[in-house]
Amino acid sequence: MKFKKNIVVPIINKKPDTPSPKISNKIKCKNCRKYYDPDNNSKCRYHPGPLRNDGLRTHNSYDRTTYQCCGGEIKGFINVLEDVPGCTMNSNHIPI
Image 1: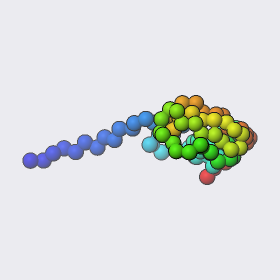
Image 2: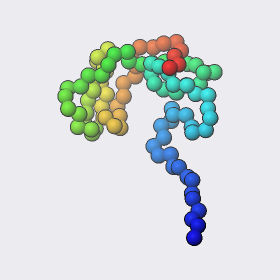
Image 3: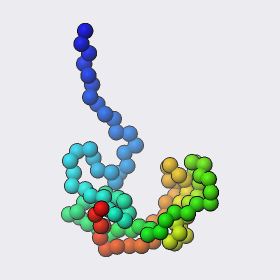
Image 4: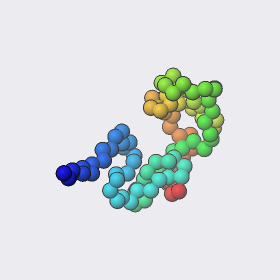
């Protein structure tokens, strides 16, 4: 008895800035870590400093992490509930 193999791979929780699994020309930025199109390179906002937290993370929506460069605070851990826009801006994205 032969079985048919189904080769279907579901894409779960795909982020909007992630390129599709098909061949694309998007490149990841070195500073903001987002994908961008090199033909349409726009401004890049990012944080140059590392993250700082107050101890053990509990992996829920009550976690608060602070950027050392500007003092901006992120709420949430795995699912970021409130993000802070970057404090530094470049005129263009820089490829990795």
